Length: 424
Image 1 (cartoon, rainbow, N blue to C red):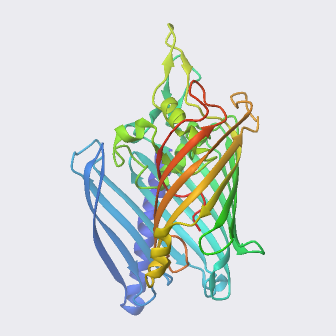
Image 2: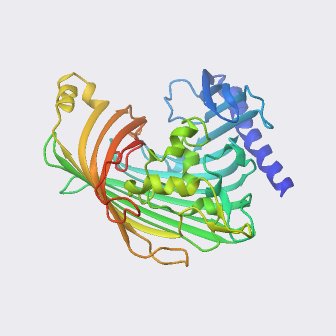
């Protein structure tokens, strides 16, 4: 496996360099644009680095030989102080058109204690010049491995609990990941469908599947309804980071966001409080505090056997609904020229409900639901394909739970959230 991993690294680094050198030889025109970058987590400390964007001049992110990379050094000098990511994209001209590109991508990263190296094929179909209507398909073959657990915000989410002691999952994985996304409009408004599946071949085979469908229904400029359905299944041999919870996304998906990739970027005390919510998964947000409490440690009996593992399971299905209503801040943004295109302040009532599908023994019985009210502020500057590129901050009050445990069903609870369950 070490030889395979080294071969992947060599190919990832050499092929972009060969392609860029070929461009220079043919046209003598290629630009690499650097930008300084600073970040933080509790293991690396302050990370000082640089981000690089390579492109043929004037192509504006959709031309040939595209390169994106970042390199950082952790000032606390951990065991692996240097981290990086590099992505090289080469369009396939024969299968590409305006807004409907096909490409090959090489990806490699070693950051926050995680290896991810592989090759992807992506294809997009866009309807004319309207980037809001599209279909996208992708396939990604990768080698992935968690090699340092000190970075993870909640170690039990990456741990096995089927033996006398808690064992960190450091499985090497060979994965094939398939994804499909469709966005268009219908009589009700805009809708989006995303489906994804993974197959892991190395050692213990496992597979996962997720399906998300969202629908926006606009009554007018200030009132509307946002609906989302979600289903996820992970086979019984799945690594623990792929399992589902009631309130938030699986731990493996935390790796895709810089704020949740490593502990300490969001202060650890805030995360452990259970009042910070990361959108995704079943997203029955009112159970976030109880789920986070179960993510923090393993409760053992007199024989040191884990009797309480994280509250995760192998399957889930959920429905999320948010009802927008009028608020004066949204009116103010709409009255400012161009501001409404980038800034949005929402006030809404929400209802979430979910249940396990019973594909494994650890799947719980029954339905878990919540209801509440929320506020959100979003800043979005779309990319050249119209994809969201910004942030969403939320404050939510899930005042009712169908399964309150030792608490009252009706109670003041509050959450600060990152990301939105329906963001387009």
